[in-house]
Length: 340
Image (cartoon, rainbow, N blue to C red; front, side, top):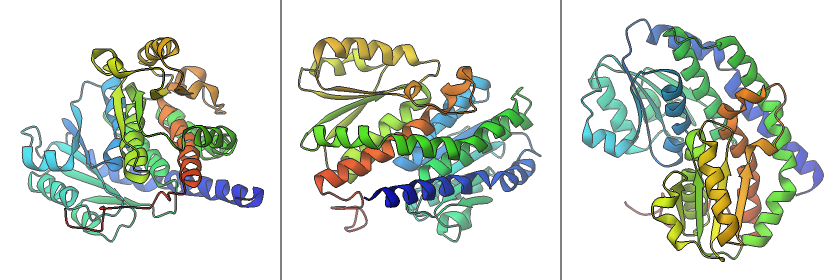
C-alpha cells in the first residue's frame, strides 16, 4: 500500500467512525422513548464478534449501576429464555448482516415478552432491522465494529443518564466526539509495529490471547474472529483472571502469548500475566493501551476507552498479518458456503 493509499484509508476510517458520532440525536430520541417505562434489566445479545463488541457495555453497566445486565449468545438466549426477560427489559442485539437466524429469533422472543429492542446491522432493511423497535445501521468496508462501539457507548451512557446514575453525560459525549480523530492517528501510527508483528508471526500455528475487564471482549474476538475465523490459525482466548487456573501450564518458551493490557480497574490482572510471561516465554507480545496517545481524554478516564484503542491498533495487525500470509481476511472455508 502506498503512502497516499494509506492516508486515504485512515481518512476513510475516520469517516466511518464519524457516522457513529452523527447518530447521537437519533440515539437520544430512541432512548427518550425507551425510558418512558421502567427498565429493570438489560441484555446484550449476538454471536461471535457481534457479541464480543458488546462485552464492554456490560462492564460499564456493572461499574456504574446495580441494574442487572448480561451478555448472551443468541442461541443460548433463545433456548434458555431467561426468566428475567420481561416487558421491563431492554434488549440490545447485533448482527452485521442483519440475517443471523438465531439473532433474529432472539429479537422475536424479546418482542414477544414485551421487551424494548434495539439492533445494530450493516443495513437497516434486513430481517433483524425489521424485527426490532429501533435499528442503527453502518455499512462500511472496515471500521464498522469501531463505529458500532461508539453508538453502543452512546446508548449505554444515555441510559445511565436518564436512569439517574450520576453520569457526566455531556463530558462523555465530548470525549466520544474526539475519538474519530484520535483513533485515526493511532491507527496510522501502528503500521510499523503491525508489520513487525506480521513478519515475526506469519508462520506461527497457535496463539494464546489474554485480556481482562472492559477489554476482555477484544481478546475473545481476536482469538476467535481474526486468528481462527479469518486466518485459520488455532487460538485460545483466556481471561487474565483465569490464566493461573490452568492455562499457564501449557506456556513454554516458544508459546505465542498476546496480552491486551488496558487502563481500567482490572489492569493488575494483566500485569500479573506480563510478569509471569517475562520469565517463561520469549514469544509474549504486549499491546498496552497506555502507550497510545489519545488527546482530550483525562488520564483517569482513559480506561473506559481501551476497547477503541485496541480496535484501532489490532485493525492494522490483522491487515498486516493477512497480507504477509497471503490469506485475505474475507477468505472462508465454511461460513456462508455450506449448510450448518
